Length: 325
Image (cartoon, rainbow, N blue to C red; front, side):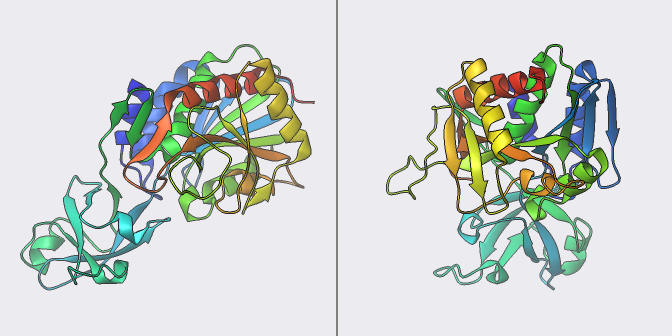
């Protein structure tokens, strides 16, 4: 899990994915024929084939914050970058690209009432001092400790570094294939699937598959969801961004059986993945999602099962090696 640890510990909030992109590019050089970065910042890694185009997408970005105002006492006001939940912010640490750290707190110590009442304390005593460290528009990622708990890993940014890990390992392990493979590590997914829109428009794939995380329903008094930790990757039939194409559903189920991988069917009412954007590429692209079951999404303590992760690698490897019809 050393690679997963490196991926999750790299700070890369939406729009600031360059450090993580460099890390992933280093990993991908041994298994691709062509690697390039497009205008928006997506990392596109191609394994040439004479068959149909398969686009596999995992997003590099994570949720974070952006500085909107610095007051006279040096405290920073901010807004969310992506789906940041207020209750996950209180007394949490964030880190800026230049290494500056800050603590998020709120005005009324008895009633946290939204990010508009919160601030970041970077230890500055005045606006002038704060401006030597950060500027309006600077973004920061949340800090979270990586910890292995038996078969499970607790970390920040499993969404979607777990998907990046699975795609990297599947490409590295994948055998011969006639498919023309595009492994795309996308930017700004947390802001509305932006990177996958531009990448899919350029690639015009014959099939698109996103690899992302998805919430489980296996905690006390949780929402009743079909996914459970340790029971295999999910094959996501629906979320708020798309309904899986029947052809892709059958293809993924067949690949899971071929790989002898346990899988779970998923139909989610909320959320979205890069597949929701890929489906609009060209005149329309059959698309689907492979989900890695995850607890506590969009927190600094997301929890995944390493068995699910490795079974996702096996599934995506088989997808790569199976000819598209």
